[in-house]
Amino acid sequence: MYSEKVMDHFQNPRNMGEIENASGVGTVGNAKCGDIMRIFLDIDKQGVIQDCKFKTFGCGAAVATSSMATELVKGKTIEEALQVTNRAVMEALDGLPPVKVHCSLLAEEAIHAALWDYAQKNHLEIQGLEAPKSDVSEEEVEEEY
Ligand code: FES
Image 1: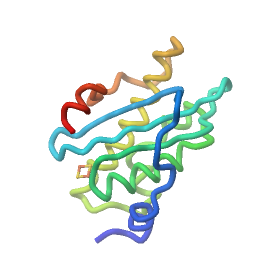
Image 2: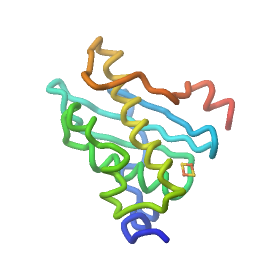
Image 3: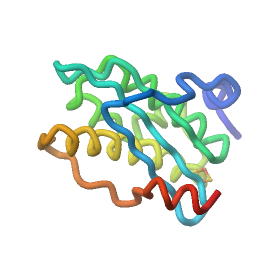
Image 4: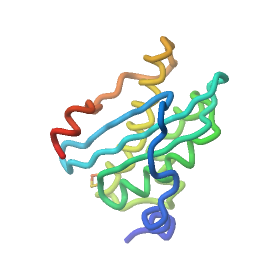
C-alpha cells in the first residue's frame, strides 16, 4: 500500500525536532483526523532556508510527508519553497494512497504557515503567500493534548 520511500521516511524521519528561535514556525491541524503538524524554519538574511525541522502528532503518512517536505525546502529560497506543494511532496515519495492525500496537504500548509509567520515577524510581503487557513494557536494545541 505504501511506497518504499514512504516507509523509509516514516521509519527514519529526517529533520525531526525543533529549532530554537526559529525564523518562522507554522502549526496546522486537520479537524477531521485530529492530526497536527508543526514546521520550524531557519531563514538567513538572503532569504535562504538554512534549516527546517518538524514535529508531527499524526499518522505515518503525515510523518513521512513532514520528513520529505523538510528535505525539499532545505537550502531553497522562500520563493522556491512556495513551489513545494503537496503534489511535489507526494511525487518525491513515489505517491500516497488516495485516502492519505490530505496528510501531504498538511505538510504544504505547515510550510506556508511557517513562511507566513516569518513574513509577519519581518514585516515582509511574500508574493503568492496567503494567510494560513487551518493554523491552530499554541494554546489550542495544548488544550487538545
Ligand atoms: Fe490525517 Fe494522516 S490521517 S494527517
